[in-house]
Length: 284
Length: 297
Image (cartoon, rainbow over all chains, first blue to last red; front, side, top):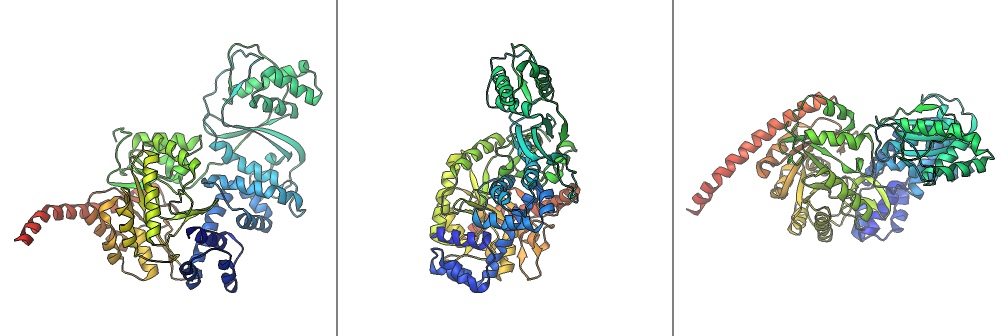
């Protein structure tokens, strides 16, 4: 009856704190063999060692990814962490992915709870993004962009993401002690990993972000540009210069692999460059 | 060190940690015979670390030691994880892959820690079947490590040694024998570590682990891998190696990781213990036929 033992220990380890007088009720909720139940009741403090070990491991992994969010939220974060463990628990084999699972769980909770700052989830996502992008597929050495075919899709490296925030959390100071508040400003970032394996961020205009998102989804340059311009009520001709500049920039950064045999385009987008700072530490 | 990507681990190795990865990559050759890595930290990812590991592999033999297979769980190992693990061990060309005699999940939930298994015949059969299937899936030998248990989730039909005996009767897998875990268990549960050692099927050992532990205020000893290997554990290591013969030995250090030079020095200390024990083992092996002949006479 290993399944009953596992579920009982999962509740003991991941669930709410258990007072000694509550242990019997907890064990009764699981299909335990008498000998299994007796073993736990005989030495609950020994089994609770695992509660501490599991929580330390998981919390340390999350703290590595989102230290500023944890510092800013304090006890509010602790409550979320407890609920995550008790109500869902980590599912991934990969410790580095626990933070993403936690933030997916937290999103609706934080949005519905006025005690959480409106920017909290944006900041957490932005912090976590660094490990996510650092772990994506291989980067390539930058090279100059060749002629492009507007009727065909472009190829990007795997290690790219477009992220959107309601707040400009990427401009907050890196210090965990900082408590300044981010500006409420719709933000789109192009995050990528460069050839040196550093994670970098480009701030995109809304139109540029939409254009790149369409390219990443596999649309041709022409379709992506027309679609983005239509979405923002912009004349394609006006967007061309910025588009060309953006694609050239992404190519030089090694994020856009390019495509032979096309005419050059031009289009929108002012970019600003932010570089990630985190390199994971710990156990390989 | 001559480049040999298929070189077998031998001698005394060190668990590769990110704290000193760049020193391993860029520094002079180290007096470390091989490195061990946890594949989960390199699987399903690109970027700096897999690239760095390729460079380490060009300089030193590497063996893989997994963390999240959940070998003893009620549910069979996750198929997607197994597929990713298969890809990774093939990429690294590890001569064998090991994981723990534990469960690390409950249904879909993952603990990311090693929880203990009941020492029963049913458990031994289940784990043995899993090890056989794992070796077939991975296409290479596998080994299983004895773990630290702070409590045993009964029923306890068998001693740990007998449990391992039952297990290894049913599988061709090897034993990754962790000396510190035996010592910590003996201290925490009040039995004699040497007696326990005598009951372990060390003839099946393919690798040995040593690590440091931490004493808590409650008296419990935790297997933290956060301190140098304790003297009694080194003594136990020597005794174990006299029985195993020359198998690779690995120093694990996961917490409070000191400068690499300190770890390399500790590897040297461990190597001295190993060499002494292996010589004793060789002498014992050389005298065995004589003893046998004498006893027959």
